[in-house]
Each structure stands twice: as structure tokens, then as C-alpha cells.
Image (cartoon, one colour):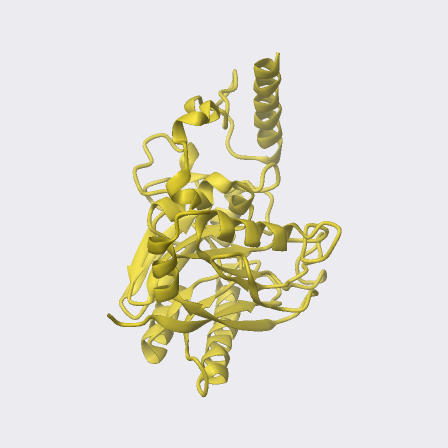
Length: 336
């Protein structure tokens, strides 16, 4: 049996955000250069086979409304950016988790998704659309909320370097999302994030590190987490702590970037064969096997998004706040 062991590279970016589609190419070109650096840097050692970029590396939602995002930044997938990544993947024989971009889809007119793609030599293996949007600020849609949506919410790709699944930023505050990726077979859990201060990589609120390690432990899986390293001037009103990390299936921190903004490339080994042996051999601390699914009635009823009396309005900051308040009232009624 082939032993599957290789290096992963989490590449955090520090790029100014495009305000129109043509500016996205500048960001993609820089990402292509970083891929070359990641591959060249590890060539004499354990070669890199998976490269991961952060949320909004291609483009961020710098406009407040869906209509502006659709007019100025949203793109269909595949596109010139995924094609450039595919060419680079073929050149190096690697897999690339793209930074996220704002996606339009003719099947869903008037909707914007926050989307990342796993790209390999064979093309786009999956699109992942952020399920847990960072409400109330984010006005792109969750595919979960669209009536009639029939594509997998948590796709996993079976590749020669292992089974890979991805979720975006706020998704990782929901253990259910990452558990579903693992239940779907994921061995490498990829985190594409734009985590801002103060919820960063340093005490007393090092949520970034705590969540990455906990999700690895819960799911007996590797975590490759690329965080946005943008400086405040590039993406106000927040500063971005970077701290990209690789965590093994027992929660050990294998490598991390020093906290703070700026470009970084973090490289660490991943041993898929060891992971598979561990999942097969261990009986204790095998949370995937020990899960008592029927014990949790919280999942048996719908919670979010609630129905509003007037549900005709489009996505907006104001509507998100109304939905959140309605959902909180539902929680209060359960407690009574």
C-alpha cells in the first residue's frame, strides 16, 4: 500500500481588496507567485502537495449591498482565476484550495455566494459555498437558506493525497459543519478564513487557535488553516492577525505563522497513512464512532433563518438583524 505523506502550505495574503472585477487578476497573480514560492521552498525536503489560501484572497465583499456586489465584483465559476490555478496545479502536480471569491450563478439570480474551490491538475474538484455567513454584516447568501437548493452543502473530494473538505471562517464556530465534513469522509479539513482581531491567535481571546485544535481533535483529522494577513489599511475597519496554522489529528500544533499582518507561508507535514491507521486502530477518543446522534433534539427542529411576517425583502444588514432577533426570541421561548 502506498504511503501518503507530503507537506501542506498555508499561504496568508496581505493584498488590497479589488473594487472591480479586473482588479481581481492582480490578487490572483500574487497567489500564483506564492504557490511557486511554497513549492520551491519545500522542494529539497518533503514536497508540498496541497496549498491553501485565506478567505477573500481573490476578492472581499467591500460593498454593502447585493446589487453592488453583483454589478462590480461577483463572478461565475469556473472563471479565469480558477483556470489560472488549474494550470499552476498541473505545472506542479499539486492541489490548491483557492482563496474565496464572490460568486454569481445563473441558477440563483440576485444571489451572491462566498465561494472557495479545490483545484487540482484535473480541474475544479468542488465548489464550497459558505453555509454560515458572518451575520449580520455579510449579505451574501447561505445555500442552506435557498428553497430548492440541491447541491451538496459540504462536498468532499477524494484525491490521490487524501480526502479533502473545506469550510469558510465563521463555519468553524459551528462544530456541526466540520463534523459533517468528517462524516462525509474528510481526512484533511481546510479552513479558509478572514479572522479579525480580537478573535485571533493570541491570548486572552485566541479563538483561532482554540477552534482549529478542537475541530482536529473532535474529528480525528488534520486541519490546514490559512488566515487573512491583511493590514488595517487594506481591509478596514478590522485588523487581521494572520497566524495561519497546521494541526494534526490529535490537536498538536505542527506549524504556525507568527501573529500579525503580512504575507506568510507556513509548511508542515501531513501523513494520511498514519491518520487512516489511527482511525482504524483506536477505540478510545474516536468521537466520530462514539456519536450518539439521537441524544440532541436541538437538531430536530428548524432554528435559522426564521420566517418573518414580511419575508419579501432582499438580503441586507437590516434584514439580517431582524432575522437574528426573531431567532433569539425563539430561543427564549424554548427556555421558558
